[in-house]
Image (tube, rainbow, N blue to C red; front, side):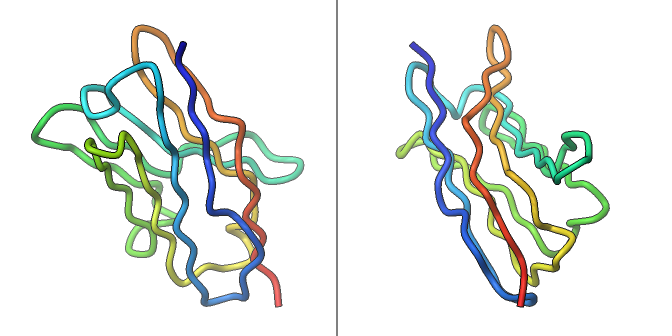
Length: 116
């Protein structure tokens, strides 16, 4: 049974940092493409960061987070991370991880709130 569990969200001041984690079970995360998405109130869910599976990763970021967010994988821990630096109020959203396996699987989401 495939399961994705996100953690690491919370309340942070503008300019602060958070690291989100998404731990997978039921499949080997390193083999597959993984991504982080977010959905702000009243807005559609959007892609934030994407990393391909396999040994040689290809990584892509949304323009709005380039230079501030970093996606990474730890195959030994079966976990994908999203390091978020220099956070701004417009980064406030529910963040979801997604596994692109034989079908797509989503985590339950973790709330990130950036506010002073």
